[in-house]
Image 1 (cartoon, one colour):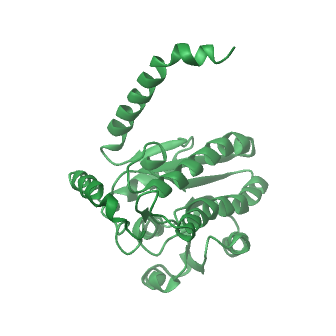
Image 2 (cartoon, one colour; image 1 turned 120 degrees about the horizontal axis):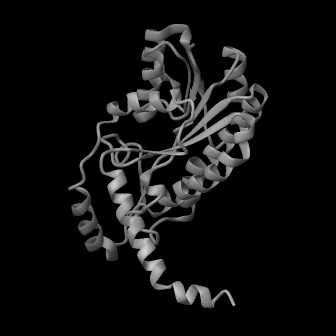
Image 3 (cartoon, helix red, strand yellow; image 1 turned 180 degrees about the horizontal axis):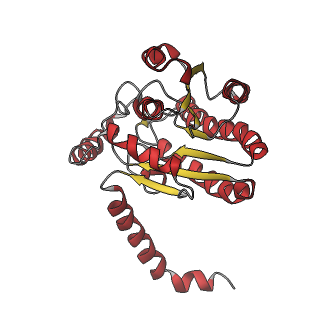
Length: 271
């Protein structure tokens, strides 16, 4: 039986690739974006199985309206994929107030508003699957993406909490954790803070390190997202990318080692 899937940020990147993967196999897709003209090619190819809706995820009312329109159009909503988001590049000191607030408004609050809008519908249906496109940077961090990292850590926290709260209603939760992929994440999609000269040397060092990273093929994620959606017992977290698990293992081994060294201090602080 075909599924009905709503994807935010479907104009390009993972969102558009996944939209076409679902449409290709016969699912119904509600593809949302700020600019829906970028989805005209999918409309021409797949016709009535795709509904495009303009959406600014920072507008909470519009998020609820889009969920309502999707349900009225297709009669149900099996899966919500919260994919809308972008990267803010720069050091913590360089980010101005507007850049910091905008980053959270889109990445964190946009995901929260769409999630809150979908839960009542899925609760009434007694089934549903909410998929949050987080990042491996929601578990570990890299320099120059500090506020982006922060939004993903926040998404990790509320989604893990929510997964327990809504499980009894038949709603599953999954956090997708991509590592570096060859998308336009650092190009047209990204925002760069005004640079401070004092960080030039550090940035050059970090960027040289990042050049050695193997970037994944975003089109290879299509089959993976189909398997996550089709899983009767979907995972809470799923890494996308060859090097994600090995890197996170190193990060957690270091954390555990550091915490073990402070065991006596921690226990003494208990009283």
